[in-house]
Length: 176
Image (cartoon, rainbow, N blue to C red; front, side, top):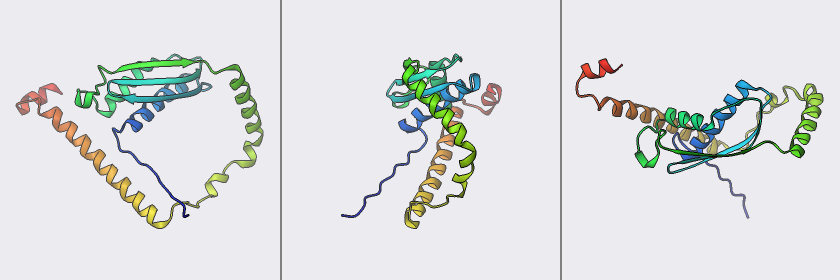
């Protein structure tokens, strides 16, 4: 039996992408405030809901609900299209501190990796082999170009929707 290869790419606004952007924004803010933060958190989204769960150990304070809503707003969910709105979404969290056993293992791994860091620095840059064949690379390249086009169209549509709220050019100019 031959090998079966599958892959998935999602566009802007897809629930997987939204969840990743929320998680990234939370991580970025935690690391900005405390570079030694330990974060093992995941986000999942559904109609009207963002759920952030995991283990976080940090000296920082971040408002997870605000970060989630701001991220959703930046993506463009500002009206009730498809039941998703940055201002009315419920954000639930279930965050604990990292367990002592895991913290001990992470500390040990960090200390070991610091010792080995000098020996392996830069090695990944020399690896250029792709596991995708040329046909798969062409398809992936096409999909990425298509996704960039869709993202641009989405942004243009949002600008147009904001403009249609104004009946005259003067009203739009005064709103800026």
